Length: 393
Ligand code: PLP
Image 1 (cartoon, rainbow, N blue to C red):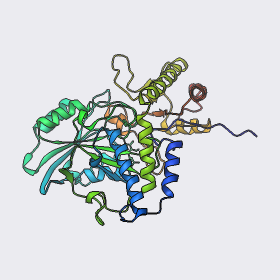
Image 2: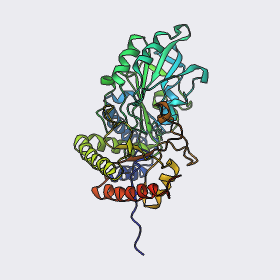
Image 3: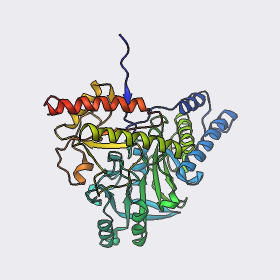
Image 4: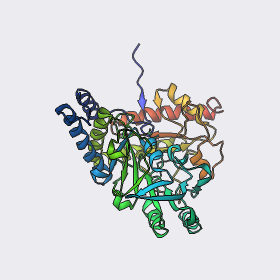
């Protein structure tokens, strides 16, 4: 029997390991030294990490000295979301964390802030953070307990909707706060510069870019303002993150960062073309499909690769399984680690009913026209069955 073709359209969950990243990982695995050792073997590993730091800094428009490698974006978020900072040698307290209601759980959980010290910033019905609400929250912030910290993502992982980070930064600055930007989904898909965004910190993840899982970074604007370390020990990463560096994962992360920078514009135009073709096809097949972020008169800026849609009568879980049986890997946008599909906190924050089903298709560098055609054929069959009440639940 011929092997069934699988079509991977879940790049926002994780991007397949790129050939360049795989090669870099394998080459780094051949290095025997500990990067903290002074001998030649150690120095070779250190040189690799120094180069990787420059590559990741270039992706973030930052300085290499301001990049701290972590085990991923979740760790970077837990490192930076803390009430305890230092400004040089002087302790600095953050009194309250304001997080947008659509943040990834890695940020939305509030890191090391107590639950009573975290306030959600609402989003508007079109899925962008409500800047008037942010202004009001910061204007009424009680500064006696410390400065405000604000966390707003660059682009949402479920909807792909790009957030008004620069505008938010202007508000945060006016109120003397700190701004943390989860740039995990935007990196490589949007031009990225920590200075242009006027953010204090960026959070990055390797595996969304085609690098290996288990590597990420906290990128700082400068060297003076830094959070109290999350992981203590041997003082690696200038004392900001102890533990022997994951040399091979960092090497793969850097290769993915280099590839993300090279040819970014051309690649993303190609991906956007496929996404547009796919969305047009979906609307032809099912006129009642709702593409979130693409409603007439309520269009917002979205990532080039993401389509988050609802089909009346199709539940997330049913739809996800139906597509999987068709050989298409996509996701319900909001899946917890058990694999169980919960209501999307992003859609509920946008004011949709918690029971609304939605599915996310996310494309990437190797997605082809044939992948889109296979998706549309499956979409047609599933939408048709739904009309006849089979896939509907
Ligand atoms: N932030 C966003 C927006 C994400 O999409 C993800 C991954 O799903 C994370 C953070 C967590 O990244 P990591 O898997 O590197 O911890």
